[in-house]
Length: 506
Image (tube, rainbow, N blue to C red; front, side, top):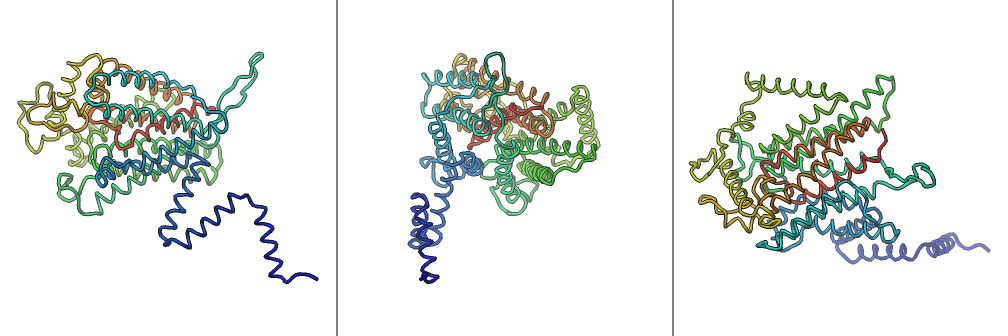
């Protein structure tokens, strides 16, 4: 005699439950108990957190994507909770790196990937550690060393998780091994752009919609400079410049790919048009955030990155130089005939009359020249540090602790750095550190220019975006320091993408 339907279903359910892994049953029970016992908000927060960390364990790149979004909130968190509480971005990065290392240990494939940057990174960090032997503050120095270790580790993690080894062919008696990508590199770019897009939206709201802000951020008698969660417009503007540069390069890559297909009377796949739309939207909003930051250094850096894009966009450099020359002529014509809004042009070039070489202590300070003279004073302090500690500097990361001994009369308070990273690194790690730092960036530029030479669209566009971003960063560093507020994690991920591009065939 057959069982009643309800009892039969119960027996089937019991059998199915017995076939499930124990951990899955336990997890389901834990979720049910959490929802039943705790208030819904707390239960959802706990379940969301556990789910997030489970995703990190499965794929650490999920964790990195979240770190890139949360990381820029570090400056805001320091204001809200103080410097004694660890930043959420750093804690999440630690969890992500731990998950990645755990992957390697379990699979017995944990090793250091060969990149052109390994030796310069090691030498730079080594010089930084040596410079701390006579530094005033060891803690400041170790924090700076940690930043550079994180840059290198993030680069290695992105490269490792996005590629795999395979036998590329037979060379004599041995197989030649090379790396190939696991998935479309555009997803890695999207990961960075989504993080930048979140900050762009915050900045646009601060500038145009909020209607209030710090008094010293007011511009044009009605708006406030955008600063995101960076709490300062200049590093925020630098971040927007990097994001816009990368997005514009990726947009160019997708656009030229589609134009080529149209010339061949082919219609690109819908996914390709969606990529083009996404990259274009990111470029637009990041550029808006850049303009609204009202940061001269970020504007100048972005202009330099755009110039690099124009030069290297065509295969023939002479054509690229012609594009650049034409663009400069159009800019000069616009300035000459007031075709560019005066508020933008005066902001961009109006500071030049206050720049001077020499002792700033004799300059009369006004509200108009305050920001420029303040930078000059910190440049002078950095130059004095370097002059008196030429070999190894005052110690890696020790500009701020050493500033009191080199401050000029009207500028007793340090701003954390020299507002010129080249002077900053010369002051902190001496001539040896500065040479190695410049060598590291020379290697980065040489590699990305070579990538532009052999990659095809759309990957060539991503390489162009990286070149523009590195150029913008290098020029902006004449006026500021962008290794702040976890922005260096963003840079490490960009370096990882650059390494992944080396595995792409033409």
